[in-house]
Length: 400
Ligand SMILES: Cc1ncc(COP(=O)(O)O)c(C=O)c1O
Picture 1 (cartoon, rainbow, N blue to C red):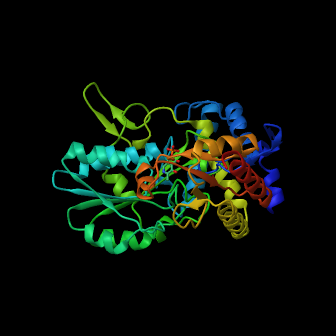
Picture 2: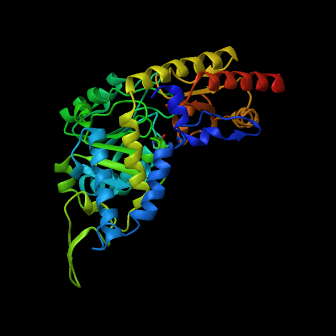
Picture 3: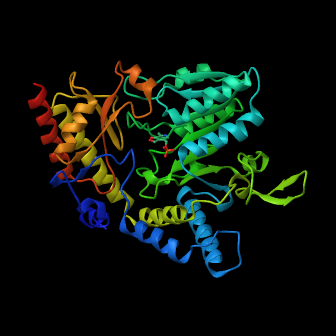
């Protein structure tokens, strides 16, 4: 599937935005869904309409089988085993699961967690709260001006008190890629676990959790061409085995009497309540779609479009935050407020994100409260960039 065919696979691109061609440059907030995902969700709502794992009738059985297929699809995508794949509602839920279940069981007074300076609030606030509750210390690993994690500074923070290092695989603001394998080796040397927030990585990088060497990997379906309200927590089987449940209730128990409950094996132990069956089946379809693509060709197209966006921003006298490598370009256009940039761009049919993108500390590191962000998917093309360039020129005209 070349870029033209990939664009055709996404029906949302057919619509006009304020009478203009739609240039959807907000994939990092949420990506568009290909027709195969939309069809899979509709098909699941019709034919896998029962409650998975909770019935012997046709529609319940179909839901169970389809959900199981989706789990295997995710496992193949991550280079993992299916029983290590926990379904959640998204990255935020996955990280909260680790903080609440693993964190409460493994962190005590005097222990420490390290998060980096560029984390999304979803990979920072759960650790802030956990550390405050457990009397533990939260240490922040700095990044340099380009947005690269300072490994020497990280080394200085790592000691035997550290129980967890939490890091974004790809920054949602700077677009930099973390050296996860190097971080994992350092963390493991002091006995710490490593949690990787893969929300911005899964759509752009090939993921192999074993090669990364991490212990937890979290991502959201809606940033990988899947439906919102779907997500994954991958963890090593031995860690899941030793982990107490997070939420408790139906579906995650093996046996219950009036006073006690015996929990099921992972991953089901971490999936209390009826899951988002249609969404998760859609996530399976999204991963099948991604796996069907020539990922090298997608990466080449994305690299070209990404570089062109950076050039368009620079041509408009914009200042790029950090030195982005993949997916996103965040920038300031002089003193024009990012919301004004995004509003004028919207009128020109260009969808951008403005604000702090749920990552305030890294904005403060760059001396701003907010930025404008253009972000791409496998359907982004040179026309999107040309439209962005015209929109930025219009912002210049309006604001002088
Ligand atoms: C790096 C990163 N982590 C976590 C999240 C949270 O994802 P979700 O809102 O799908 O839970 C996002 C979403 O923007 C993100 O970019």
